[in-house]
Length: 256
Ligand SMILES: C[S@@+](CC[C@H](N)C(=O)[O-])C[C@H]1O[C@@H](n2cnc3c(N)ncnc32)[C@H](O)[C@@H]1O
Image (cartoon, rainbow, N blue to C red; front, side):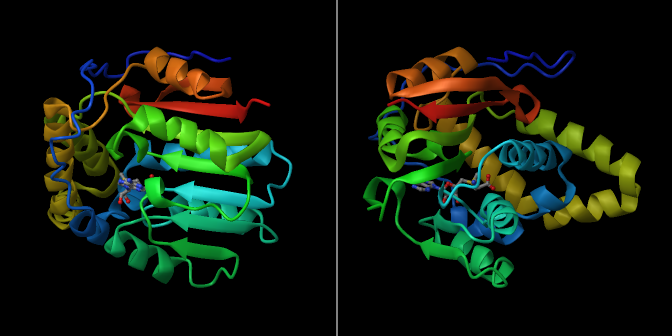
């Protein structure tokens, strides 16, 4: 088990409140979808997560059946579909804007199936070898119960690749980090243009931050997430902070 700590990384605070299902999230995932892939194009922290995922796949036997839960615009499904062309990838994503982007981007892959249901209504065709759940658990109703549902998706010994946002998003801190990075990489004029094009991302991240503050979205520490995952029937193989300390990355094996 790894418990790496990013030295010098920003340490966002955890709000240890339980989600209140009576409060409604204000995140507009469809609006977010239109600008979402600026993250994979320009945010090095997001790119690092994709690299982590690809590295995890490199160490695995070919998974025949893969579910990507809350798969968004399909960035993780795309890596899995490319790496394992003989495997079946199911992208489970309830937002039509996100799914449309995924369908457009992944049109060259004939091993991806799109299911537009929320996870809590997903009826899996068979037990999977690999389940991917990145940055979507925190936004689901009753996330700790959803972890038990994730376990039920997998055959014993199957793998869960889980990344979850646990700490409150600090929008000003992210803005400063990204603006410094982009200014260095592409110059100030292009950085301003990217920020303008990505203004919907900032808007929706503010909504996420507010939902976290209100307790509508789950916030947790790395050890709280690991404990919840173990309680749901997983063995934690790898765990570490991710996304500049805002999130946690866990690679887990479904216990028998
Ligand atoms: C921040 S995006 C992450 C997308 C993708 N996994 C990625 O990392 O690029 C969160 C996604 O979770 C999805 N989501 C929210 N509630 C969900 C639910 N109940 N079931 C499945 N997906 C959900 C949203 O529609 C959105 O696409």
